[in-house]
Image (cartoon, rainbow, N blue to C red; front, side, top):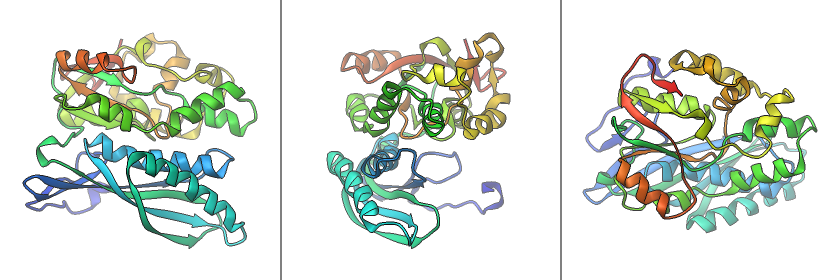
Length: 314
């Protein structure tokens, strides 16, 4: 679809949609640029406040993935006219708690009548124009770090089918409501060459975007990729979301080495994530320093010169 649209360009536009980055970036002054993003989706948990918190964490993540700091948010809500208004209030209250934790202010929003509930945010942040993190800058020799485990998609599917363990659900909710603020702070002033957050396209889909935009190959040690408790069991139980299958169909041809992996693990690498972690490409010394600052990141691979496939699993 994007290929059918005219290219957008402007003297102050730093990041548009050409490289499928996480947010747009527009320079206001030599010292300040706007970061803008929007994301909303249908409920993935039953509790309204928890759904709101997850929606907020997910929307805020795109600003941190660009190296920015969120400032303001506008809610985007599709709400059934027959539903109890207290439900929407609970969703927004849960979201506001996460916005407050992030130092981001809810300044308004827009609601439309819809038969299916959907909720999320348009978020605006700021970043120094010379400190923008893009998915297009990964360099050969860099280390790849990931800040959250995979599995929210399969666990959410298992929850809908009534076959998810309580501890699995709790772990998935804890991951989805955890702000990437902590990972962003852990990176600090490190020299980041490439960054994206892992969401609906799964680790393989978002890693593919980084590899193609950077014209490199990302070598990923599949056994080092962190998984949420119960994720592997969900795959064995057949709780595979349609998004996982779509991701595999779309990106699978650009992934080498998958035949050598256990099928369940390979599937999880394509699992669509909600409020997933940051995937970061940075020099070896910087990666060591970042990991020494706290438990937020796991080393999952390395950047190589462009090879046969954009992604090579080992």
